[in-house]
Length: 249
Image (cartoon, rainbow, N blue to C red):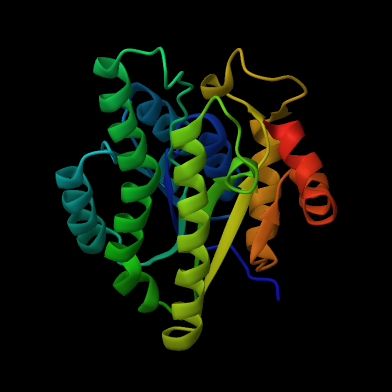
């Protein structure tokens, strides 16, 4: 079932950089009003200048609980018409669990968990009353192929994305039972050419292409949006899970 995006208000976390920036731009092009949340005011200001009246920007660090609470209060008051939530913000750290100093590993791990998981879950819960008050609403949680098949170098990132994948499924179940007009999608992201993936991997897809696939899946109401080569991984993991694990490792 396809949905119309024109005239809707969409909240995009991490909405002024990387994949989030492209999602914001493409939603604007389809007639959405975008509320972009991010940490970097310079990037937010650039998006605001580009999008004009169709864009509102809010500076917030979603790894901080107090800032999430303030953000929920502000969004509820200033943007009560939000009907699309795209949880895109996230970080990925590579680490050597046996050799990296604990003074770096533990604080970095806590922030990675806070942003990738706590921020996603708590913002979603905080905005459920706003979303469920709309005639129709949609939540899209951006996860990763690494939620399905993890890699050794990013243990915490893989764990948070796997947890986000599970939360997305159970959130969908509860929405189906209590608010069937609120649809829930998971976008399983491929390796995308962004600042976060600089120096990692090859044959990346562009942020523009990744965003285009996410929005196409959103518009079609798909429960799972497999982006780029994750479509192949999905088939391979089902047929030959050991081979998929060996490749992704």
